[in-house]
Image (tube, rainbow, N blue to C red; front, side, top):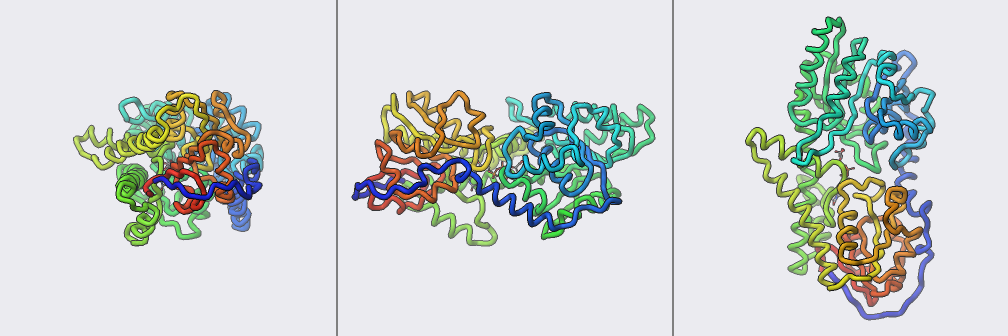
Length: 480
Ligand code: UGA
C-alpha cells in the first residue's frame, strides 16, 4: 500500500505539470471523433426509410439517443420540459459533457433534430416511434421514483393521434412495462381511439464517456415485448446499429427489465468483490493488479471491471442495485449478494479515507491537492461520486482542498478549483480519485514538489514501482 524509497533529488520536471485542459482531456473526444469519422462512411437511411422519432426526455439517454438517431438520418423530435435545459439545447449546447455530443447536436439541430417543450406540438408530428427516456431517480427507501415516467405516459396518451411503438428506455422496476401497457390500452379503449400502441421495453446500456460509440456499436439489443408482431419493425429501425457483432434478443417485459438490473448489478458486484480482495491482498503483501490480471485471464471470468479502487458511483449502479434489492424484497426474494455489493462499496471509500487519517492524524490546515471529482474520468457527472464524498469528509476534518477536474469546473463553484494539475503539486499531499490519461506523461520526480511528498492513489494509476528510488510515500489500493 505504501512505498518509500531512497533518492531525494529533485530532477527533470517534464512540461506535463503545465498541461492544460485541451491537451489533457481531449483523448476521449478524439477517440469519439475518429469513431464518428469512420461511421460517416456507413450509409444513412434512404429517404423512403426515414422515420419520425419522438424522444421524451433530454437527459443523458434521451439526448444521446436523439442526436444519434438524427445522425442515422431519421427525423427526430426531442421533448424537454425543463426550461433551462431546453434553452441550452435550442442553442446547441448539451447540458452535460459527453465526447462529441455538442458536435452532433449542432450538426443536426433544426435540420433533422428539433427540440421542443410542447408535448402536444411534438405529438402533432405523428411519430412512428416514441422513446421514453425520463429519469427514474431513487426514493429514500431505495425504490425507483416513477413520477416522471407516469407523467410522460399520461401526456403521451392525452396527445397521441396515430398508431406507433412506445419504446421504454428508462430503467423500469420489474412489472412496470406491463402496467404502462395496461394503462395505455385501457386509456385508448376508454377514449374509443381507433389506434394501436405497442409498448416495448428496451434496456439502455450506454456508458458515460463512450455513449456515442456504444449507441452505434452496441454489444446487444434487448427487446421486451408482449407479442412478437412488431419485432420486425424494431429490427429494421436498429439495422444500421446491428452491422457489427451485436446480438439481438427478444423476450417478455419482465425478463428484459431484469436484464437491465442484472447487467448493472453483475458489474457492480465484480467491483465490490475485487475491492474486498484488494483489501485482503494489502494485508498479506499481495498485489491486486497481478491478481486481477491472472483471474481475468480465465475467459469464463473476463478481465473487465476488475479494477480495484475507491468503488463505484454514478447515476446507475447505486440506484439500480438499490431498486433491485427493493423490488425483490417486495416479493420476499433475497438478492443479498447485491446488498453486500452496495455495503462493500460504501465501506471501500471509508477504508481509503482511513488510510489518509492513519498517515496524517490531524488534517487541520493541511493543503490537499485532489484530482478528479466526477464519479469516473471522462464525465462531469457528480452523482454518487466517491470522490465528492471523500472531499467532503476531508474538508470536515479541517483540510483545505484544491480540486482539479476540468470537466466539472462549472459544477463545483463552491470548491477551490485549480486551473492546472501543476497547482495540485504545490500542495502538501495529493489524492487521486480518477485515472486521467495525462497522469501517465508525468515524470515521477515531478511529485517531489508536494510538500509532504505523499500520494494517496484511489485508482491505482501508477505501477507500484513507479516511484522507486524517490523519497515519495505512495499509498494505493490492494498493493503493499
Ligand atoms: C454503467 C454501465 O457500465 C452501463 O452499461 C449502463 O448502461 C449504465 O451504467 C447505465 O445503467 O446507464 P456508467 O455508470 O457510465 O455505466 O459507468 P461505468 O463505466 O460502468 O462505471 C461505474 C463506476 O464503477 C465508476 O465509478 C467507475 O469508476 C467504477 N469502476 C468501474 C471501478 O471502480 N472499477 C472497474 O473496474 C470499473
